[in-house]
Length: 581
Ligand SMILES: Cc1cc2nc3c(=O)[nH]c(=O)nc-3n(C[C@H](O)[C@H](O)[C@H](O)COP(=O)(O)OP(=O)(O)OC[C@H]3O[C@@H](n4cnc5c(N)ncnc54)[C@H](O)[C@@H]3O)c2cc1C
Ligand SMILES: *[C@@H]1O[C@H](CO)[C@@H](O)[C@H](O)[C@H]1NC(C)=O
Ligand SMILES: *[C@@H]1O[C@H](CO)[C@@H](O)[C@H](O)[C@H]1NC(C)=O
Ligand SMILES: *[C@@H]1O[C@H](CO)[C@@H](O)[C@H](O)[C@H]1NC(C)=O
Ligand SMILES: *[C@@H]1O[C@H](CO)[C@@H](O)[C@H](O)[C@H]1NC(C)=O
Ligand SMILES: *[C@@H]1O[C@H](CO)[C@@H](O)[C@H](O)[C@H]1NC(C)=O
Ligand SMILES: *[C@@H]1O[C@H](CO)[C@@H](O)[C@H](O)[C@H]1NC(C)=O
Ligand SMILES: *[C@@H]1O[C@H](CO)[C@@H](O)[C@H](O)[C@H]1NC(C)=O
Image: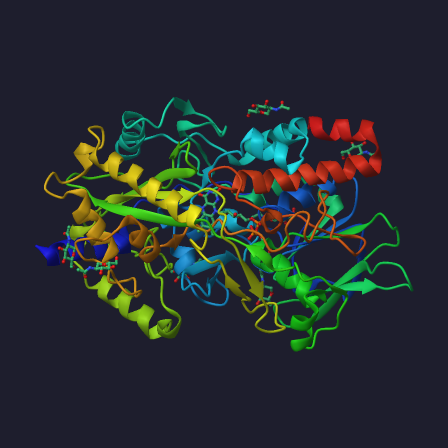
């Protein structure tokens, strides 16, 4: 019996979302301004240079291009025409592709949790689970944003990328379970962040086809923007006139053949370079450009532009913990569609999938060790061999065992935080990142409350069709906690506490943020403190993850800051036109 459960669990980890379905090919934008960096001139000049064509960088560059010349530099390739990115059922294919040209670059935090960062036009929105939901009005107030422009910016984003999911039985039963156990009211379908249970938006349309931040470049003015792919920025260049602040005025980037190019700002002091390279990329690039802790930069032989000890501080990743529930009946393939927003700082979400007779498992499930989930590997055991072994075990399993879903909880915040350091001067290398999951006891407390809530959903009447009556919660917990793909020491005895379970089964939900936080590295207008003509606009500026899931707010922020920058430069009337679009 134990062996059966073990097989079932591992198989579910492996193939929870694989599918033999193929989505109809969709019309994709054909951007006339998108080029391979190999075709770029050695030197060129623009009003704005945006580094990173990700979730924030695309809407930002599209907006600025309306009135100025913009260069958008993205280190990855195009997402268009790649089913690993566009198909819902392929979730995890990109994450498990560890080749140097993969749209996902794997990294392992010092905590031992395997994680991933985007390397593709559209950034994290090309890899993510698609859930789309706004930040709370309180979050907007505390950020000091203008609520009206925020709402207009969300709407601008939603017109292109957000959809209402069509709930099937398994997700519906999670929603009904949440309501049954008192995560109320039932707020129906909404993008808004309100206590209770809701169906949120998704960037997957009704054919399971992903729409991404790259699609927001449809808003760009084609003559105002140059987008270069496979363009990796190595350094931001500064001009230092005596006694004044260093002023950013250009960038050095390399194409895929290793050729070096320079791009400069046209000589107008209002022109700017904007870093949107993500929570790992932005602090990394500031450091590579000489803005960071002086001693650390010296150790890497980097010329100091500005001693700034707070660059790379405040790195956080919201811990995710899940319980796997095998199902006696078939379940639909779903990513996140429903969320329970509790009053104690925990968000409850879920994903499901199953095997299809005749298909072959692709091993791309949300919790597959191939993509890193449930693979918290202690530092000394983080070998490729260890991972390969877990994957090998998985691949030998009986497909008939695949069936069920994961109910997960993510804590808000988090309060715990860590830091980022360079490992080398190569921007292609991952920096070293430490998140310190559950270092603050309040984070652990929220996890425990979240898991208790998940337990109640599993035991609810509404969810009962999707669980085996003879598998009580302690057995399910035990099963998840003893998953062989997690190489951390196990504490699966009869007194396994939820605290221990939280620590043993910690995963990422990939909402990591920080490193260039507001009031520490940038001011409230996202201008880098201590230098001129440089801003950072992306998830690295957050103190806490916005909403239940961040992407809506990251895209909104790109648009919002584009509108702000234009309105400051063009004056109120032009800005009003701009926001009406
Ligand atoms: C697997 C996964 C699942 C997720 N699920 C969800 C979800 O369901 N819902 C949700 O709301 N959020 C989700 N998220 C989180 C969300 O997608 C991210 O928070 C968001 O995409 C981060 O946006 P960003 O603009 O800060 O960074 P990114 O989108 O990562 O953009 C940074 C860009 O900069 C580029 N870059 C970096 N360095 C350089 C350089 N030196 N030169 C040139 N270019 C560079 C990168 O290639 C990248 O394209 C998920 C994330 C992942 C990875
Ligand atoms: C994309 O646009 C270019 C320029 O307009 C055109 O030459 C090319 O054929 C188009 N490609 C596709 C696939 O439509
Ligand atoms: C800015 O661009 C928009 C759209 O391209 C245009 O309508 C507007 O007139 C421009 N404003 C200025 C001041 O150039
Ligand atoms: C750019 O061109 C180089 C050299 O031809 C090629 O290897 C690379 O794949 C191209 N990149 C993209 C994004 O098309
Ligand atoms: C899709 O992912 C698979 C497995 O991760 C990989 O082998 C394949 O090359 C990827 N395809 C594309 C087009 O990126
Ligand atoms: C923005 O929209 C939210 C609902 O999404 C609403 O609660 C809020 O009042 C709006 N803010 C403004 C300034 O209109
Ligand atoms: C959990 O597993 C451990 C060892 O694998 C076993 O000793 C314990 O009895 C199990 N507890 C439950 C509740 O199944
Ligand atoms: C069970 O595990 C806990 C840690 O979760 C440990 O403190 C305790 O001593 C263990 N009990 C037994 C009987 O092994």
